[in-house]
Amino acid sequence: MKKDTHPKYQDVLFVDTSTGYKFICGSTLQPKEKEKYNGKEYPVYRVAVSSSSHPFFVGGKQYVDTEGRVEKFEKKYQKKKNLPKIKKESKTKIKKK
Image (cartoon, rainbow, N blue to C red):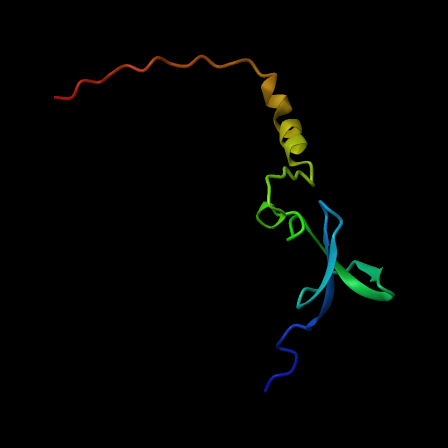
């Protein structure tokens, strides 16, 4: 049998970036960032949505924009808003024979 074919299985600290909720779960992820939690150091993996912030588990509608996606989109397309508008060509109907 070949050695080192499977990734290393370890406890990883998952952090919900929208609520700050932290939980430990076994995973094969290999994050480089580490953080102390309950007196022990764990590799940290940040998630945008978990059971503590997902509307299905929370029981209501909750708007989560943790990474500034709306602002990022507006900033990206702000330059295009200032461009002059292009005239739309009128559509002419083509008669079928």
